[in-house]
Length: 214
Ligand SMILES: [Zn+2]
Image (cartoon, protein in one colour):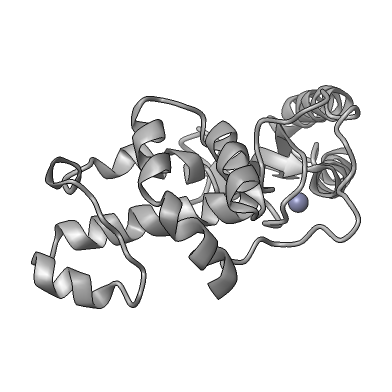
């Protein structure tokens, strides 16, 4: 795919082309098993490293158990399909790094504080909004994403404190919102970072009455 929708890798945080993938890992331990999954928009480097580490575990110790012997090959096949689907993803550009909201970037973005909120409320994609504003504000799209997340956090905090106190607590971050948006539901803007937690280790007992509890 030529142009990924995401902007920031959800595993390493670097601003780079990303693709949504799901990888699964199983560790068989006879009557018990431990599974882990990684899902999210990952950059090519993270796709590569998670695919190989998790698939090699499936192939080596993944199948050691009654259920695992069925599950592990299935997980491996799913991982391979996901990996092949991500082969066309562009490489992480040289010099790509985790976007940082520098004072300079904040200064450039402050005039745009209202725009992303309005556009997200009309259900535009955050990545589209970020690319568009980034071009005009002369920052990177990743910095716009960070800015919006920060903005949303501050608005939520403001909703819980009196206006006067909130104005003082913004620490030089001018947030001017019409009153009707002060009670903006957090989910509206939280959406973009939903699923940012990637590793979900999950020890699972085999559904068997005789299996020992850990
Ligand atoms: Zn990454």
